[in-house]
Image 1 (tube, one colour):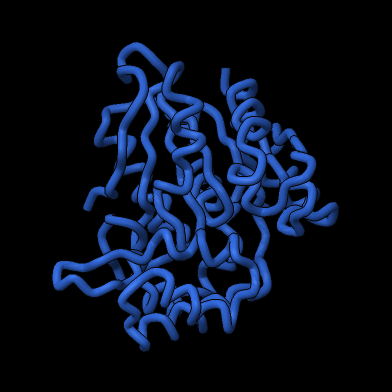
Image 2 (cartoon, one colour):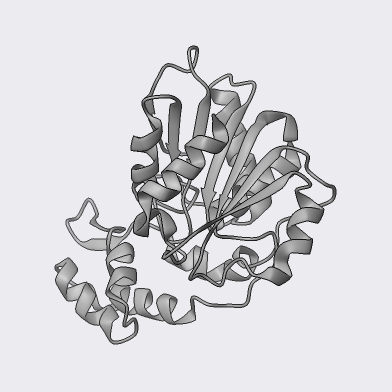
Length: 257
């Protein structure tokens, strides 16, 4: 099955292709700010990963199958190569694609994630999301009130609420497949499979205030991606592309051009 995507920018025959991969509980809309910045120079394919947005639902959710989804998309467009830009979970998917088929990856941009296993950090969010599902709110403001009992940060709640939409019956529900994400969460925080060293040009962009990429991760990054470079965005946290879009977009464009 093919992922849901939104294509924009230049024709793929006349320009390089960039594929954008969002993070956990997100959708392609989250990376529109990057897509818009790239459209004047590139063919941009912005993707809903499986179990997210308008893409298909599946019981399987790990980095191997998610990377295969992206390779299927690359083959669908008949592309020899594409540049991959992935945020958080999407960054791990992008890294896994490079490990599976390095020849298909022109360049790799990883936003605020490392090729390491993480501890569980979404337990409270998952509880809040389940609470919304159980209480079946009739508006986003009602859902926000439910979530505010669990999640203090307004920005995090606003990000999650973007994926709350009416179904065919007119009831609000999460666009992402919450039960399957919860069931596979241990796989999502797991490291990607790194059987070898990838030699594709790679840029890791870190938010200065984020703890997702730490000094102790440098060994794992260089071991997996020998040509890795790093860029730090000052004044940004994990959602760096939302907080400092101009700095992030400039870093991406400078690297892939």
